[in-house]
Length: 371
Ligand SMILES: O=c1[nH]cnc2cc3nc(NCCN4CCOCC4)[nH]c3cc12
Image (tube, rainbow, N blue to C red; front, side, top):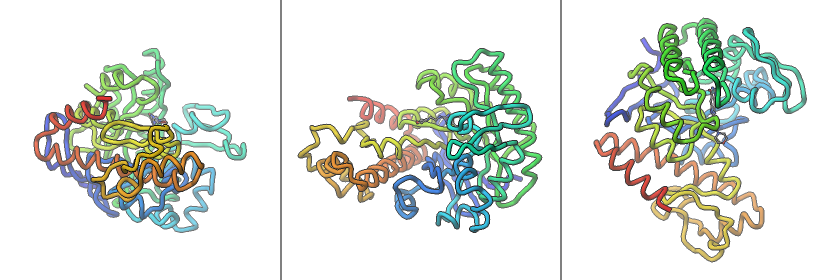
């Protein structure tokens, strides 16, 4: 019996909308998880994040284990209490960021060893240690296995090696996690762009048994088209009655096209990171507010939004804040972008529930990419 019931309320083609029920609250799917890297969704208060409609946020194990350390977060009551977010939190395993952020790192069958990008200190991450950090010290609700994300492009032999290591680490993660009734563990499908490897990865994960399944190894430079070609088959290899989480994705068009192929959950730094740099995501596509054409544009980013950052401030004012390097610009645009990503997933949930997702998908692409 799955610890978190996943109730699919409607389907439309391969798209699904439902609710993942957790002790800390319900997660409406398709869901976008704002990234709360170092115990904060950058430049936003938890109340602003909640106001956008986000049901769950992501915490990064790599950052928190280095600073302030997982043990300190534990002593301070766990991640929810520490950052005052009382809804669900999904934590990643730390492995992906070790490979992309830390100094020298070494990967063996046993572990990933690396030096901190903060102070150069040495650290070891095994499947078991990652589970301890996520489940026992940070206290997250959804825990991710430690895996190896193979760089793209990969030869099939290299992709197989990574997929098989990740499958062995999936088993070690499950054994370390054990059975818990208020937390769940997700496995991660690997296999790069090889259909046979993705199928094999999925079969190994199903044998072990997880409460949810992530699709890893994508959004690593392959581009939208190649990602969609993998998503044409990869979600379908996973149990249809459990959540499917596409890691690190993505742009709004990526979310829509992945939902059309059966994905339920997403996370990406794009809305917050691009917001800090003056890029606003809108139904009509992304705009750069530093552009001179907004200097006296008195219209807001989205007059129909219930988010104050989208509805109440002129583009002229937002541009001024970025030109003057005022912190408020980063706050308002992060807030707007997260609100837009939540409005996008809410619109997709409604479209699927009403059986009009294909029309939504066509209309969205025409308007958002139309230029
Ligand atoms: O296989 C994976 N395993 C565990 N974590 C991951 C995280 C991942 N994140 C991305 N892509 C992130 C792409 N970002 C887009 C925005 O700019 C920063 C990079 N791909 C990912 C793959 C994995």
